[in-house]
Image (cartoon, rainbow, N blue to C red; front, top):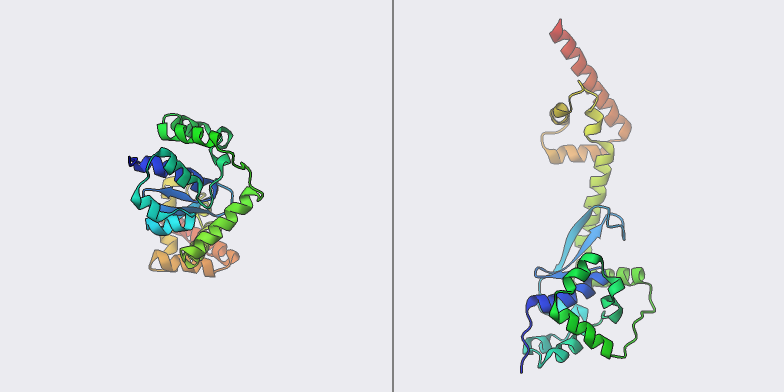
Length: 235
């Protein structure tokens, strides 16, 4: 009999493997979260979509697409298909590889429980000779090449670096000492920005192209002119 597999059955297992190799797999397809600092999930990240094409995704992960579309004879047939993937490691399904929330979710999935039982019956090497971080780096680089996303990734990295640089050179903290009214910071920033550009994009570029000392000098000039204007108005 052909076994019926819901998306959550297949997606959950492949998603777990993908997560361990630095990728994400779900209904949307295959993607990676690119952090400002590699291996530091606390840093800002952006989502880089690799592919929405199931065949291409399975080709990259080393899964037989033809077998997939023909369906599986039984659960063991499906399980065998999963472990034949290029990046499968049985250790990825050990309890100590899962966080508390993930363990709770998987404990409620019959297919996951059966898959664990199937793995326990197999005599497979549970270890990888390569360091996990090194593996993740390699896989992510291979994915960028396979899906032709090197340029998109480089563009994303440049955009994040520009954003970091912009915030280090210009932000609301430079206007927080005006009048002691934080609610007016945004107004002062807008007034200042329009001195140098007509659009946000133009001002963004002005900040990137201008050295820190000049920016601070111009902000001080704005503050002094504002004080003089307020002083004149009160007299």
